Image (cartoon, rainbow, N blue to C red; front, side, top):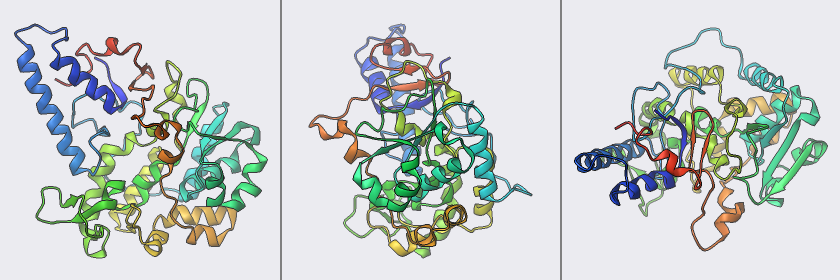
Length: 374
């Protein structure tokens, strides 16, 4: 059996083409039944992607390992956390600094992805506090855009570190040798409406199958306070099935043949951090906001207050910590592949449990049937 930590839509489509073209290595009497079951699993996966507000091109990984989708997914490298209250947890500040120190003690270069938004600022400040400064390498996509997001941080902190700008954001990391870290899991844990940009164009509809409808002309309203209970009830299901999938988006074009899974270390990807967020959820302390381009700035600024508190405590910049505006997702704008007229072709089709990169050269080794839950 082959298990995965990352699945691209290209790999999913490759399986579909492979089976439909009858190139599979399956008994001819079994092919039709297999195709029928494969189609059923794809439809089931789409159902859960809709339920958890993810695009059909993305993938799910049940943290508890109970729900299976098309491909065998691994939970080996993620924290094992159930939805229950945890007593006597430290403050988020103490948790993040301890987590950063643990990563620093691995003794490797830390490649830190930074955008100037509050999540990446919190990550930078945590590592800046505990790491030798020559251990950090700050990676930024977008050039001047990143600097403008938070000029003071660039001038006072980043300029003192090893840093670089890139137009190949998804391909610059090398997790075969170095630590990879980001702040992508913060949205998942500390509050964005629906936890996906899909909800930025969605309207609440209690009569629809999933509780919302997309592609409507009306202003998105899923983060309206009257929908707080609905959003609250969705949080654990979304988190449980997507927490293990977030930061892999920044590794879609890496060139190594195999990554060291111990180098995959997003700062918020941690048992204690997740327990902290579950406690907040159980206590109904979350503040929601619309994560799309129509996000209400005031409500956005009230979100993620615990991350904002951390920034203020560590850096003392009250104006940025509590009034920093929304940094829109600009990955597509600065990733050079997206500037071409054809769809991007990323190197990474999938990543296995042991870190092997499935690419166009070795894909036939991963179309054997051992990869599927069927």
